[in-house]
Length: 275
Image 1: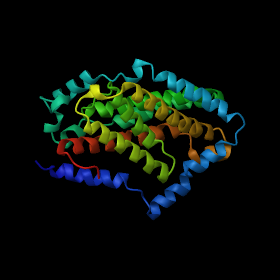
Image 2: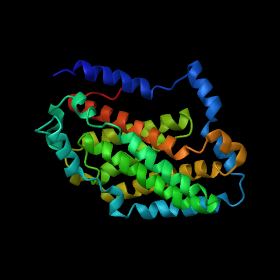
Image 3: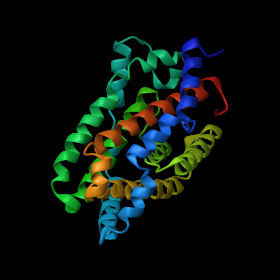
Image 4: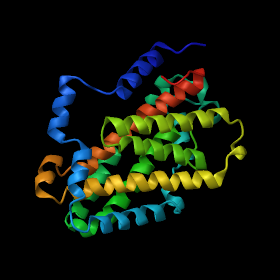
């Protein structure tokens, strides 16, 4: 069995998305938005920034123990897919279907979450640095829910610990400040994917190690989110980042989830090596 024309085009599109952009338009974009790593360096000069980060990370780590963070109504999503074009859809036999059919049900999922996080960020922004820990935790929660939905549409069960770790690594990839960190995050994601692929039984996974890894990735993402939010209270940086950071970041996370889960779906379906 070979990929369809649509799936072959998707593989090219995914590879193009993951490939670092070095053209003139990319350089202009970087000049306009300022690389995040430079912004983070400036944020570290803000008095008391460590306290804000510590509070944000603590709140995010507490979220990891909240079952609602991982609660995606998979049965409802699968039922929706079955009602709208794939009557026999089941996550256990999803690989019999063409990627085009699954892509067709994603719709404006990114818009739904980008609007939600933008609205939340607007209210939190009025509170200044005091409101950042709450805002960062809310951003983390909503973005994880968004990624969980993408995973579910492509037939992956976000309630399994290893799938939670994979979803967190997708968010880590999306939050990476700069091409080097982005590449490192992709390597970590691919290493995890290979481990998942080699396992034939979920019971062989060491859940305690997965929990440690989940906390480690969540902490890293929490620090990045908090630094980006802190940057918005510095006038010279805020004018360059813009008030729409929440919506922009969520759209970025949704794009990463869309492309990375499509990539994983095709690699699983055709037993392909990662591009």
